[in-house]
Amino acid sequence: SLCSFLTLIKKVNYAISSIKNKILYEDERKNCVFVGYDKENKPRYAGLRGTNTNSPFKGEVAGSQKKFSFNIQGSSNKIYVFESPIEVMSYLTLNKNTEGIENHHMLSLAGVSDVALERYLKDNPSIKEINLCLNNDETGVKATSGIKDKYKDKYLINVEYPMLEDWNEELTELNKHSITETKAMAFVEIEVQKNLYKEWLGLGDIIDKILRYFSKFLF
Image (cartoon, rainbow, N blue to C red; front, top):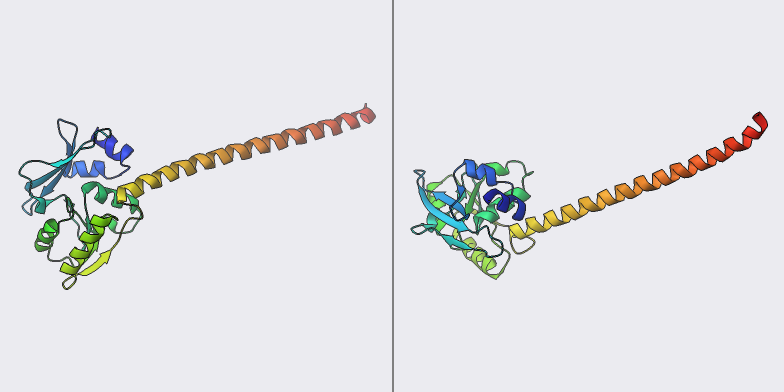
């Protein structure tokens, strides 16, 4: 299912809230559908992502307008820009403990073209800062450079790349290490308990020998 795909496989925590906000749903073919709205709150874009990991599928519903790509409206003067909706959700999950992160605008470009960013900035003139969080690969780095040059005269521009190729890969790897670390800690705790038990048994043997020795003189 959609929630299983996003939470168990992609490790993101924002699936349920996105469903409630009607920017994400599952179609009859079990695809994730990421919806983008215009400023009148009319759906104008729908990106598709297959949930079958053995046969990955990405696409768009016919008639979708990329300039209205998937986004999460914010209230601050900052916007964070990504290549895809799953990258948006992965970044939010990675930074869930960052104070105020939920107040910022989040935008998927549905690729690396800036048509969605240009439209979003026009509709939200209060935005003063653009945070470019595209993928850490040749395409993402090249697009970041182009977008930065285009908007640097009007906006404060920050660039943040994931440590791995994209934000979801970073999130997935972090979860793997977290699970491994948890298992390792559990193993250490069991070994400590086993050693303490052995020490307790050893001490019990010593006490028993002492009691048996003094019992010769008491009885």
